[in-house]
Length: 364
Image (cartoon, rainbow, N blue to C red; front, side, top):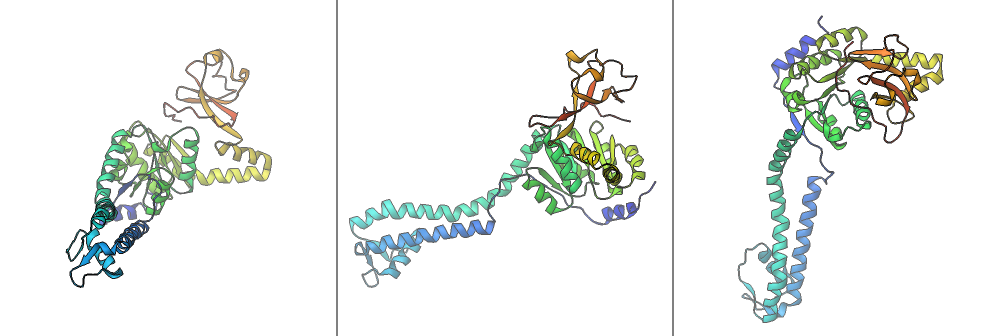
């Protein structure tokens, strides 16, 4: 089955060289122009202070041209001294003026050079520092989550997984929009700018070492290509994808997705349920929102629960995960609980409520 627009995407990939770039989250800093302006203002302040120090002790200096030092001569002397030019036409001749040069003018000269030269050094070392951070990030990134698409669906998915205890450092966002990646890094996530249908872009996100992949692209055909590429790079990762049209869900599963969510159908069912029963719609919306009200939580069976039926537990059990099967709480095949089972329960959300990580992908 060929999806609409698939040929166009392939042609664009062949005709254009796609550039990609990795951006790591960083602390909020001032705009570069503002930083330079601030440093120039500090340098000018040092220059003015130096000039007035010289002018206050002008009797201790001599000018080779006329012998006296006025305010203009003081600024001239401060400029050539702080810049280490030192023409020698204005010189300190008294002991007090020379002591002032040693203990006041010289430290101001050093401060002046640090302010101006520091700006240049920072610009020169910024690229090296970023390369070092990037190499260190790559070497330590393991079992992370790759999110393709930082739109409404992608952001909601990230908030949900992070609400379960996943650290922001373990999330990598891939999106072709530079603005989307800037928003992701501002929120504390690492980002890769580029087309996720290309394997080199996903390799930049270290997808081959990822534990799970969330595909939340805007187009279904893009989601199919991303799923195929991701599954080729990582055979063991759990891949969850979102599609708009329900007819494309089987194609996503054939491409390697472990679970496929049809966003349009899910929203439509929630709308219909809200019309039939507003209260039921509110409950479902509460369950969807992680961390507030009621939450759906997956957890392992504890020893005290072994041998009991799901109805006998204190928690509200919805389903039992046994092996690769998801059984309803009232399914006859459940019988009594086993130590290797996992439970899908509904609990009251608390600050410490976390979803136990899934160790094996479930396939229907």
